[in-house]
Structures are given as structure tokens and as C-alpha cells.
Image (cartoon, rainbow, N blue to C red):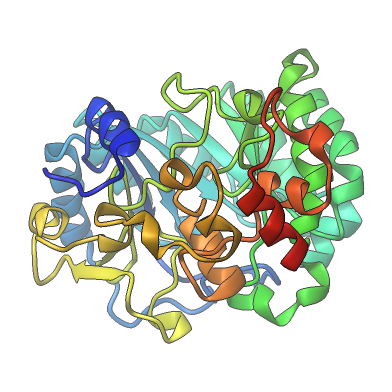
Length: 388
């Protein structure tokens, strides 16, 4: 597949391969919680969600395209009656599968279904210690998700946790890590909460771009000291560049720096009604926005959607001249391409201008001590920082 990237990106993506390597699949929009940070307005199921037979066909299409890892998501995926059958169909085709649950109704039966389906691990959403977590989700949800974590660890299943950083939990992340280590959690992914979906109605929770000046060093320090457990992972919306970049990105195929959003290049998202996006987090009809929907699996095969000329143009046909704001003058612009597409769009309504960038915030704050050694900002960058 021919990609119209700046030369560094052509070389990197040709080496890595352009296929739907990672998929996040929303099996249902149904959810038994109403979280304040939910980006997809989950609650009631979509009226036209894929049937089991349709899901099994899609699972086969993912495997045929070389997909390596699928995350079963929602809503709350365990509210989809056939989640474990979809998981088993994928694992039988050699795809690595995990599930992300809120833990509210995670029982021993769910655990056995996960094990029988061959899931590589189970992950739970935990957004802080009890007060912070329950404030975001629901009273009593902390107790339930911790019980789900304990049950899974005790059963010998690899158990992970995903936490979104917000203004209620930022000062307790180290304490939360200690708690997870004590409970035997194997890995912990940290991401920032974006002002989209329900969280767009709760600006008091949303961290500001300048908060990256403490978030990135904190996450990097935890990654440097993995002996404290669990293993810390930085999500794609934390970064970019600066002094800590190589520490944050060591999982990216051995490339120690951010190589740009891979939505529609190596990442794909499937909504429960069969809509396909480059990344599940990108907005769609639930947000009165359809520009990121590339097709529907009831109307076209996944291979047809993936290979359609002009598909995923915001990444595949990227031109550095599209970038605006600081991104337009940044020294890393041809590789970074504006960072996480979801974060950029949710913050500014523009895929090509992303204030949630560590390098940008360090330059704007005059914190040259946070930059990589020898990384002197250009006159263009400094001029923009003064104006901005």
C-alpha cells in the first residue's frame, strides 16, 4: 500500500508494515455505569449492534488481515452475551486477545469464560484510590473492581489496570501504584482524560496541557523503576519528545521515540454497529461527527474498507503543511504529525494542532532543562512560544 508521508515516516512505516495490527473492538455500547469521563456516552446498547454470526465473520476478517492483538471493549463488554465466543474465535486464529472491564459485575463465571477463551490477560479500569475512583464512576465501584482484580490474580490470570489521569487522582498515583503492586497486578497503563463525551461536561476534572510538565516526568520515573511493580505503560496521548521520550516509548517496536498516530495505518477501531474508524476513541455519530468513520462492516468487508483509496486520509495522506499552531513550526513535525489524533481533535477541534505535547509545553514555559540534551529550540519555535 502506497503511503503519502514525509520521508522519515515512509521509512518507519514501511519497515513496520501497514496493516491492522492492533484492534480495539467495542462489542456493545451497553454499560452498567455512567462514568463522568466516558468518551463514548456509553449506557444503552446501540439499536443495530452486530449479531454473533456477524462478529464471528469480522473476527475471521481481522485474522486474515494479519491482526495481532484485539482488545474487547465497550461500553462494558461483558454485557455482550457472546463476548467470550468472539474472544475464542480470535484466539483460535492466533490473535492475542484481552478484555477491558469496569469490574462491576465481574464474577468467577466471567473469569472462567476468559480462561476458556484463551484470553492473554484481563484488564480493569481503576481511576484512583476509593474516593477519586467512586467520584468518577459510581459509589461502591472501587470495592467491586478491587474484588475483581483480586479474584483474577488469585486465579493465576495475568491482570492489568488502566487509569486515566484527572484532577482528582493526579496526586495519588504513586500510592495507587503501591496498592496495585501489593495486589499482584502485572501491568498498569496510564493515559490522560480528554474533554470528549461525558468528560466534555466536566471540565473541572480535565488536566491542562501544562500539567504534562509534571505528568511526563512522573510517568517516566515510574517506568525507570519497574522493580516497584506493576509494569508501567504510557498511553499514546502522553508525551511527546523532550528529556524523557526514550523512556516513555521503549515498547514502540524498539523505536525510542514517538512515531506519530498510527490510526488507520496499524491501528483500527470497530464500533458495535460495524462502523470502522482508525481508532475507536475518535469521535463518530455519538458526537455528531462522522468524518472519521471509514465504512460499515455490513456494507463492505474489512479488507475493502482498509484498502479503499482515500481511506484514513488524515494519516495516510498527511502533509506537514496541514499542521498549525506550534505543531506547524515544531522540529518534530514530520514524524510526530500532531501527536494523538483523538487528543488533538478533542482539545482544539483540529487534528493538526495539539497543545497536549510535552515538548511544546516545555518550550512555552521556558523549561529548557526538560528538553533532550542538545535540543535547542529553533527561532521559529521560540517566536511562536512568545506569541502563544
